[in-house]
Image (tube, rainbow, N blue to C red; front, side, top):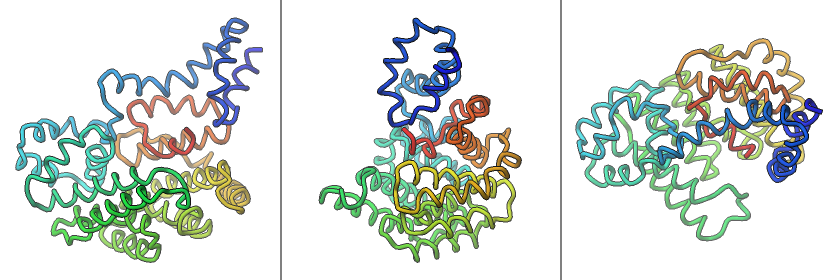
Length: 339
């Protein structure tokens, strides 16, 4: 009975799993061993980091410790704008992405960010304003299909997108700022349904940095079948990259993206697109995709997508072994697909 109780919960469709949790709790008295194993494998590793954030009064830190390491929160609280900007200006391309995500996307620093943006003008303010307004735009839009949005949602969405576009289209003298701004502009163009312009911006960023991670992540959404692309465009993006580690991440993203389309039945070709991708890449990824043992942003995303790859293909022990890489390092996607 132990095996079947674990199997039933673990492979239960995600949309119906949690409503049935009380039933399984009731069956705890029938099989304590199975329930304890289940807590260890699934619930505790996932919720432990969320519990820590709750105790601290924070939402998850999407800078993954970088904001605290730099002392940037203290600078903002003390209105030490010069010190703050000097720290931001010294960041590498990957750490700038990490920093802006933590500052502008988590909700932990909204008041401080708005105060900083309104306190003057500078390239760093423009960049942070663009990243912040882009996040607010998608927050105001919500997760519904375009046809279901209210006039208020549409107006707020487009208003903040236009503000973000104004800031992100600025020409930045700092090449790292320029690449970061244009990588985020890709998502603005996605929101405006300007697929061709998004593609042009993507290739411009690659001319500045051929492996700019955020550019790939944002353009990946644009190229997906449920937005402005199709499965063939997405496949080409995933399998033609020359950098081995980035290529593995893109292949994982490709499989997960098409699985999410099938899971939600997003369009008529969703199932066959996923099955084709799985037939081509599943066995290859089982061999090539491994956890990355460092704390780069590429490693963080790869480890999250690899754990999700194991989950959607019902490989609980492999997913369980990934938990040590995800403590305090869970990204928004791919998990937002399956909540």
